[in-house]
Length: 231
Ligand SMILES: NC(=O)C1=CN([C@@H]2O[C@H](COP(=O)(O)OP(=O)(O)OC[C@H]3O[C@@H](n4cnc5c(N)ncnc54)[C@H](O)[C@@H]3O)[C@@H](O)[C@H]2O)C=CC1
Ligand SMILES: Nc1nc(O)c(N)c(N[C@@H]2O[C@H](COP(=O)(O)O)[C@@H](O)[C@H]2O)n1
Image 1 (cartoon, rainbow, N blue to C red):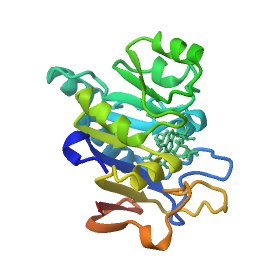
Image 2: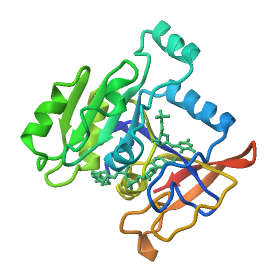
Image 3: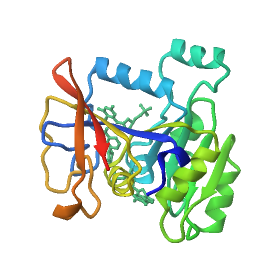
């Protein structure tokens, strides 16, 4: 586990259904959050240095990961920051499409984190995208600890992760997550193959992660839970 001083402060924000799912079994995006929760997420985005998702989320949702409020974008610009936080994709094999929305929507830096196993032509194509840097960490799959240290060197002190299920699990099992913000919405999605908050291989009983509850807040018909991760 790398010391917190050598990496950004990392928190995950996710919206789950009452049965803990992130999306449907077809991996179709679901509006779990209502207007008030999306606005809370927008404020969190505006306050962070960078936002990260896994390639699975890019291929499923094609998110732009921009700050939606004009006022918040202007406040960032007035403070000498880019209008949007740095948008980061964890993408071992460099599968990010060059026509993805993160390249088409909003200004600001993008970082694609790949492994040494990524095809060179794909890395070259991504490196040529405007305001985009490709970082290599790990041999076959992205090494998340190495990535976190490199992101600190890029000047990122506060990093917001927005899923998905595999990346959430990978970061938590690598001991890289400080805080979780989980909005539990008023719906049941169901499905044994639908992504949950943390998928991956799962922890054996002795390695299960324990959390400390920091806050509980009702937002419309859902609940926002804030937890710190115990290591
Ligand atoms: N409700 C919500 O708040 C959110 C829901 N989602 C949903 O989650 C689903 C996507 O989740 P996943 O398919 O699990 O994809 P993911 O977004 O977690 O990306 C997983 C990919 O990350 C890459 N990766 C590279 N190195 C890794 C490492 N060391 N550890 C872990 N991952 C690594 C791998 O290529 C892996 O396939 C979609 O259905 C999407 O709609 C995604 C984000 C937020
Ligand atoms: N906070 C939240 N609530 C939901 O109900 C959601 N479905 C998500 N999904 C995440 O938001 C991303 C879309 O971002 P853009 O609107 O394109 O900027 C999506 O990819 C998930 O990460 N989040």
